[in-house]
Image (tube, rainbow, N blue to C red; front, top):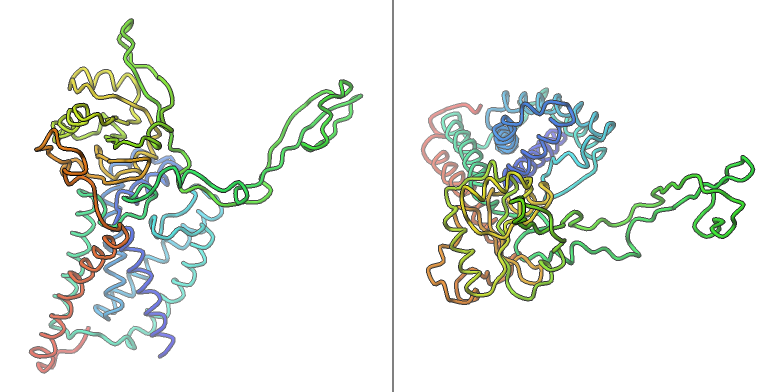
Length: 427
């Protein structure tokens, strides 16, 4: 009995946590699914990645809650078992083949290694099997009459919560570009704590090859001939939170009307003491232009008040040329890695406000400020967030929890007061 209770708590809690943190950021999970599709040469299925992501995170969250509440015990335990039967071998393949750095099972909130993910799934599979065999020992919280209402509410909450985070920015941000984060700080790692590499030099003399280290290689002995150099990782250290953030400016060459690469302005962006506006559009071809006029207003506002404004995209220069010729925005274009841009903001396009490399605020395209006061300093426009980001995140989590828990508590109260005495058996 106690083992069943323990398995129920562990399996249910892991499913709820895993489903919730991925439902916070369904687009991030979508990109992870796309990584798997690329590794399996199934890129044609990219359009299905987002709906599959929403379905999976909703199912995972809902099954975890249903198990904890003891609702639909037969089908809940069976579906959890099928879930684990599918994902346990998959995570074994991921651990062995290592096609992606981490499986993404807990989103960006909690990253574990691929082997740790597999061991975790072995434990969950064992718990799921026990729950299937001993499901009659799972005590239900609701009567047979109330259980369908609770199940429907849980499912609807999961779907609507995931969709909200698809069409708006995630309500909780676990990424290194979250509001309040310092980009330059997360690009730095103490050299004493960084990866340690060893370089081996191979030289030959009289037909015999020999390996040397950096301390003793014969750099000033002409009797030795250099053959090759190999670098290997000796010990893994800390990784920077942001590794590939690099921004290159683009300019229009008047001689041939082609957009060309200029110089690297990464340091300029992350060290600018003024406010900087970054319009992030990882793909101009796929970008929604519904709210483009708002970005134009922000660009004009920035120009009038002396703030830099950049449109950073991963699209190639030919696409940029066609797009700009069609929309005539006058934006200052820059280029950066697509994955980094998708990490910076889950909106295509989106807007970020930076100061000295610190993320002051960010908006999806539908919430870009309308700039009603074009000559007002940024600090007086309401664009600068005040307060501690961690406290604001905790408050949002409290609100989300309340919106989910309170209706279930009320349903439990109604169930006990009105339906329990009707003699309905639990499911």
